[in-house]
Amino acid sequence: MIDGVKVKKLAVHPDERGRLMEMLRSDDPFFEKFGQVYVTATYPGVVKAWHKHERQADNMACVSGMVKLALCDARKDSPTCGEVNQFYMGIHNPILVHIPAGVYHGWLCISETESLVVNCPTEKYDYDRPDEQRLDPHDNDIPYTWARRDG
Image 1 (tube, rainbow, N blue to C red):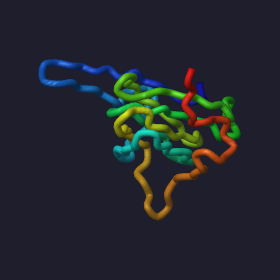
Image 2: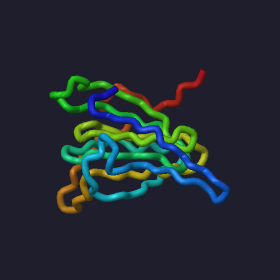
Image 3: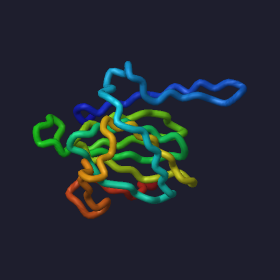
């Protein structure tokens, strides 16, 4: 596991009215601070990658559909520099992934319908000076492919 990445299994509490799922609590051991909350939709088969932040940590959960989330540690001083992790998250595996600053991340929507990913980053988005570095999703030095592995 990439140093600083945390995975929290999310508990779903159903009853006759529906269900409730807590994602992030201020007493979670990896909680740092609140910046903002947003939701992003991804259409089936679309890759949203790669990006990283220098200051911001992300706390992501897929609340509708399914995504294949990939991470790559780009922190030169990290004991796991260059390591890649992959997670399947969404309705069939409700987890929250804490992604530290300096770790490239992105996902592929693997469900037949759009996926909805909720993020609670530690910083609010700065429109004048975005804390975001991007790489092409397919043409980069990250040792990862988004291709489906059949077999």
